[in-house]
Image (cartoon, rainbow, N blue to C red; front, side):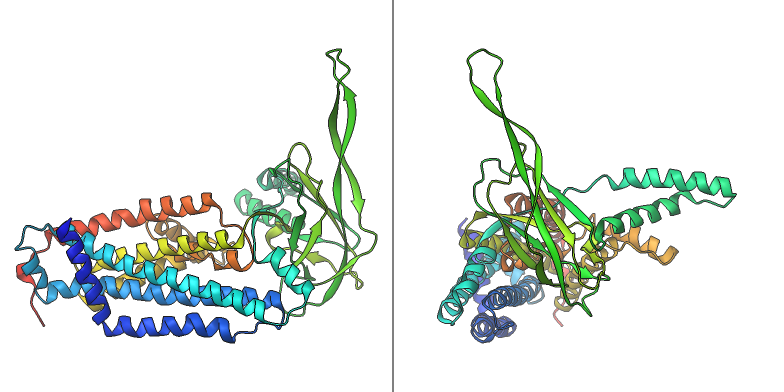
Amino acid sequence: MKAFWAIIRLTFKSAIRSHIFQLLLLILALCVVFIPATISGDGTAHGFIQISLKYSLAVAVFVLSLSSIWLGCQITSRDIENYELHLVISKPVSRLVVWLAKWTGIWIIHLILLFTAGAVIYGCVIWQYHRRDFSAVEKLRIDNEVLVGRRVFMPVLPDIDLLARKLLKQQAERAKELGLEFDPEKEFKACKVKITAGFSEILTGQLRVWQYKDLPVDEKRPLYIDYRFYVNKVDTSKQRLSHGLWGYGQPKLIEQKTANGTGAVRKKFVGFDLLMETRPRQFMTGVFNEISLPPGLISPDGEVRVNFVNMDLQQAPLFTQQGDGPKLLLKVTSFAENYFRAVLVLSLQLVILAGLGCAAAAVLSMPTAVFVVMSYLMFGSIATYMVGTTYFAGTGDVIAYWVSKILLLGVIPMQKFEITNYVANGELIELTLMGKLFLQYFVLRALPLFLLGMWLYKRRELGLVIRK
């Protein structure tokens, strides 16, 4: 352990002497202080907090990510190319200990920087928020929508595949009657798209009901609905003001005497009473809007029902994205705890990037190692985009889709660690999400690459290394 900590100290010194690291550290310090102090957003408290948090954290993590990759590649490869490793392994120190110590030193440096930057960003945003002259209404909205950690519940959707199969059967019978050609696979995909689009569209005067499940039965606090509707089509351009009438299902309970002869009375849940607001609400389409619901709407089964009627004055249809409907939000924890969870997720990202840099530099020279790591991360980003594509223009798109699916079994898409939106929107970063990221991307993907890098580092012929 003495040698392990000695190498960590040397790694610290090497990092501090690196001019690139010094430059990135200067950029990080400027961004952490400059962005929260100068950004104004859309002029509202809500916009200021959201943009300050999102941009500040995103820029800080981007700079630290570059630094992690650079130092991981530079320090590991330089020790080999400058013959410093030759001197170290002449001592009773294993190469595996050297690799682990360098990796540990690099991610400790960046974790210290991340937690420091995170604390400064948190303090700057809160300080700027309190010193600015925002109205009491705006500050109340911030406390309820951003400076909080709220669990997100999505509406329950019907079985799209089952409905698509029923529609496919009808179309197949009709095609047979008319003597038309029928491609079941192609038509099944078209049926799914049609049904999904039907759940996305709300016609004028149409009542749409969204159902939410698995809510805590004993919850007495207000619920919130976060929604974004588009007018005419799902497009951010040419959006305008629209109107809609909101409502909710009030759980209906009836009293019944128990059959045990004691005369005790119990309440039985028999359904929901439909309650609508008295006046339509005006909202801007294409942007997120939020309304609060009164407490006491959760049924004994943990269900909530929310109703909406499209009352657009121009009688245009409204659309939701991907047919998923509005989000139901419930406060679970404080903003400080949710913010800390975000920093933990980002720290896992930096640990992985530092390890990838060290693993690549174990067998490659400095420029090549950086290129390989960046290409690996780029493949993950492109593969994630291709897998999310729902429209295929031809055979090439289909091939790219399945190649991307295979690539994602081994590559790490950094988009999965993008959780600044969660913090900026006041959405809870679930512990299950944190555990999933750790298991899927650190244990199952990154760790095997680290082990491969350590094995190659151990097996590398140092006698073949020639200083350029």
